[in-house]
Amino acid sequence: MGQKTHPVGFRIGVLRKWRSTWFAPDKLVPQYVAEDHRIREYIKKNYRGAGVAEVLITRTTPERVSITLRVARPGIVIGRGGSEIEKLIAELEKLVGREVKVGVKEVERPELEATLVAQDVAFQIENRINPYRAMKETIRRVMSAGAQGVKIRVSGRLGGADIARSVEMKQGRVPLQTLRADVDYGLAEAMTKYGVIGVKAWVFRGEVWSPKEAREVS
Image (cartoon, rainbow, N blue to C red; front, side, top):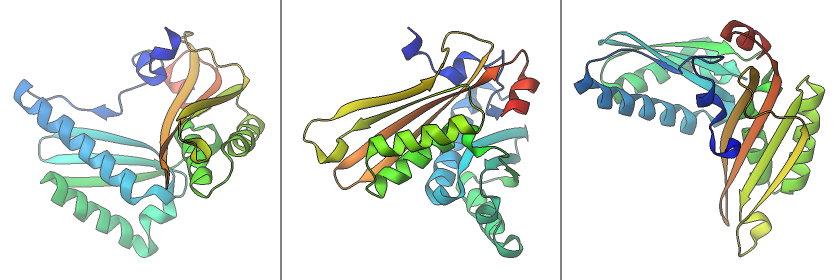
């Protein structure tokens, strides 16, 4: 059953916190969930080059949405003199119809963020690098950054084959059922001329005992 459990959702309340933090009456919940999805999809689509690891959304009042972006390259999101982030705020306010506040945090160790690891492999596949070579090189870099284990799975029409297949590479250990194990999970998609190739990444960053320790490790 370990393969069927989302590593992040499995650890919410133990090592992880919610990526969306708000409370609302029942009738507003669908609206807020849809807004959160639109915000994340917009940022994912328009800031692929920034290395967005996480989009954290907080609502303290119905009139305001606070968004914190954890990115590997904050300069792309902020822009020269803050011009790009002002543009982002204006577009998001138009998208959700309420006041938006955006903060940017730099990811200190991007090699240990599973989402960024998956994005790295996806970018390489889009640039026509062999999937095996892309996974092997990325795994070497992640392990040298201090990870205790990493697993990457690529699925789709690899090399333009007529039949889709999945290939997987792994190094170290990735304990999927150990709750105290800080396992990060990320998913990315490579858009190739043969179709979409999915990339999944699991990064085991060590065993911890609290959400604070997990954030310090990451």
